[in-house]
Image 1: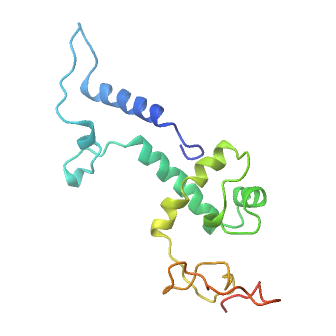
Image 2 (image 1 turned 180 degrees about the vertical axis):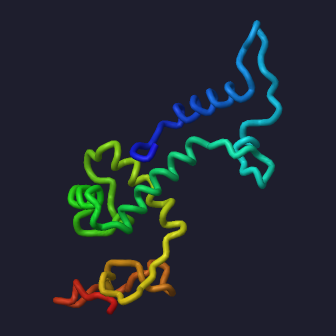
Length: 159
């Protein structure tokens, strides 16, 4: 689940297996008693559920964790290999799916929108943030300058 996006049909089957284990299986032609809906069981205990995992959401969170590593750990082997193949001149959040991507890359790429929900820039020294191509301006909807870069200043950084 950390490396590949699992099909929703498989997630449903896993949840069905967990459900039948918890509620009991058919014994002597009888079914176990369903005390609660499955949706209620997947809620956190503080919200009245039993904290069972929603497999699809769990899969996305595991892939999101790997994608976060692509954003934050530029020295890892996984980051260097994927960056060289799929997004050599840009950031992971701006990377396209590309032509004929691997199944692992499809899974990681699918979490881009999930990561942008909570992703914020911290400028710091600004030596790694390109003025023209990275979203760093808070007041503009695109978060990037609207003017094209002047000649010879394409690599200008915020610092």
